[in-house]
Image 1 (cartoon, rainbow, N blue to C red):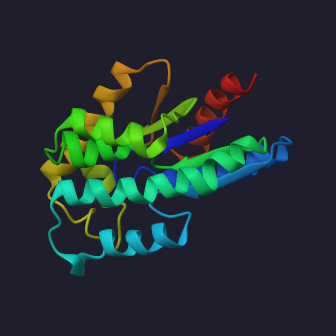
Image 2 (tube, rainbow, N blue to C red; image 1 turned 90 degrees about the vertical axis):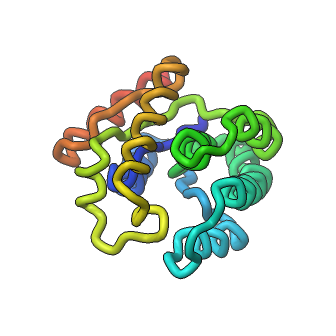
Amino acid sequence: MFITLEGPEGSGKSTHGRRLARWLQREGCRVLFTREPGGTILGRRLRRMLLDRRSGRIDPFVELCLYEASRALLVRRVIRPALKAGKVVLLDRFQDSTWVYQGWAGGTDLKLIEAIGRASTGGLEPRLTLLLDLPARRGLARVRHPNRMEAKPLSFHERVRKGYLHLSRRQPGRFRVIRADRPIEQVQQEIRKAVRRVLR
């Protein structure tokens, strides 16, 4: 089972991913929880570079290439072996993030992103995508020390949110939209309910 967590900045993906992983382990599942970019040595190095404000402006197409390189390695070395071993894989961000950030909000051609994405992932798609949704301004207010991506203008983050909601309408069978501007326990219970449905 492959499950991804997506959402705008400050939506709580990492927090809820860790809580979900612990709950699944208590339910008897073997779980791998990782993130993008990350999960490999190359991914962690790219993450530091891409999110470091000292990197300055990076063209969205260059961002696309770097994210997809990290993703290709993560899929081949980490995600597919874990799935083959029977684990539940929880991933904080995947291809949808690139479609939204570099494409919908960043202006890179969406069909190009989809084509490169299929090549880098080998066509791997999540069984379930949990979209933690909240207004961009509210999410950014939760960020204490903004990185290069979080420091982009509010208008960019509002486009990111709209892009995610567009994707969720386009693929309702895969997405579960969950309001993230509520108490953590309430959000987590709704996440677990959505996961239970696909684990049956």
